[in-house]
Image (tube, rainbow, N blue to C red):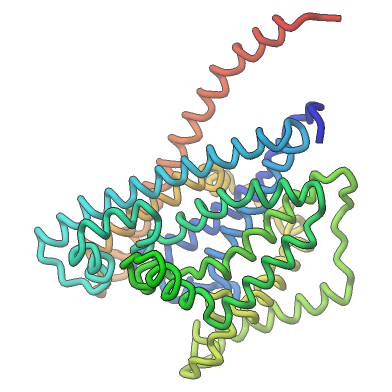
Length: 395
């Protein structure tokens, strides 16, 4: 690592567009309409959440490794922590919204919607503990359980990356894979019961700590972080996918796509066979689910640029993807309001279309506002940077 300045990082519009697409798919999945089930896991047995986490980790590795190489580990660590604080404040705002506005709606309107009851069940029974431990990221109501993952991973990433930039990624990724494997055999609930509740005395039951298994999903994050950071390594080489690997990936991706949409079981690959379905489990990132995700990723990496070159550039998706944190939070606000006011009751087709259309207008408005705000910040910072450059001694 050195203090040598790197050229300004390139903004990959393709990544922003794909993140925007992931946000669109998550919104359709979470807003209760007739489109929720058909659009859920549209590319096979992989949801938008996996793609969103993987892309976010890749971008983090790409951005913060540049800072690490150019300005040192301390600057990289500050960048990670600053982002973690921003995400934490977003999570705190969402929790406040849930515990005030949505709770007031549910109690004031006597809402009997099961999903609203599940969202607020523990908080209404234990308001003080619920509020405190939600801010400590232990109690995680449904739908509000993905940002705590980001915060934890953002706090861990600078330590892992600092070690990996000096010594390589082999040991971190082997440890990450080992934790993922242990999670497949129930390590996470065991640790919660014996360590969090037994040793530390934390009263939050495991089923109120979020659906995502942290020890499983960390593998996806650190894999994406490694891939992003590897693009800035001094000895980085272009990624070349061997032809046999590509052929296998195409077969797996197409097979799982057909299985998902043509089989009578839909999103449950093995129907009522719960143990077999764990192989594709979302919350533990089951092994066959990871295989499907890897296959889709290889196919998208190999053929995606060519496909995109024949399509109009989706600037509206770029705008949403470039403001992903704000749009993600805005989509949760919209989902909570829709669930509280309209629930899962059947509606005419036009009503579902109008509902989704209104939500997407709201999300795009948020993304547009963020883009305008960031553009004004860059414009305001440019003169200051120019003055500082002129003030530096020459020669």
